[in-house]
Image (cartoon, rainbow, N blue to C red; front, top):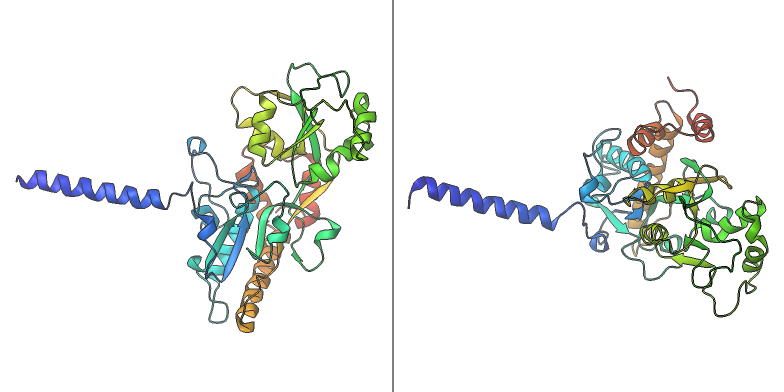
Length: 352
């Protein structure tokens, strides 16, 4: 066989092998369910909580944006978003600063994808914290019932409940006008479900439906029995945004940045409203060590979590702050709202 032909065949075979290896570890399709066995630290993330914690569509990825040092394990696994970039910066520094007492490598850090391991729509990620993962790195709101038995970071983002409607789409004059079409769509297990509708009612934002919405909050039937429920709950924002853009319901309620960013991924879907928030919700990172059979293993895990939150606090409250970097990388060419800018200032002071 001609030597040049043989060389070409060998190079082609090597290329095929390399591509198969890359495909098996495809950053866009990690295998999070297998990612925490035997790991020293496990991070809970979301694959469908754009723009805070998600796996981007391969067709929409223009380039990988580095944040505050080396790419961490979450970015390497294909995840991105505001909260992901903050967690990754901390994890990368933990690895760089590891010593004999706190030895940690990227291989020691596992990833648990909450969305891919969800069995229902009940939103159980806080029940999974301390069982399936040690640190929850997603857009989780600080609430009073989430402060007991958990380590909580400083507030990292300020948002609030808002709503959007389809542009140029007529809205019903009454809540029961379209029996076959829900009035409101939202994602189950979120603050939109627990507090969103009440916040809109309290603000007098949807007066034409107020009686029916108050009845809904009280558990009273709002429309004739043959009607579909006025509020439809979805398992994730991808499904909710798709249904909204298909006009499956009229009002999409949720955290402002999350609902608008998910709609923007759907070509040709235009919305109105979404300019005002009706609650003030602060996002944070939460931690709780997974129980271990051996006490010394559990103490090492707790030590790693403590180190994580110590580094996170330093990176947050000092200038330059990781908050500014994560925001500029996630919301490219977008200025923070006045409320968010004041929030950032209250956390890290004046920018140098």
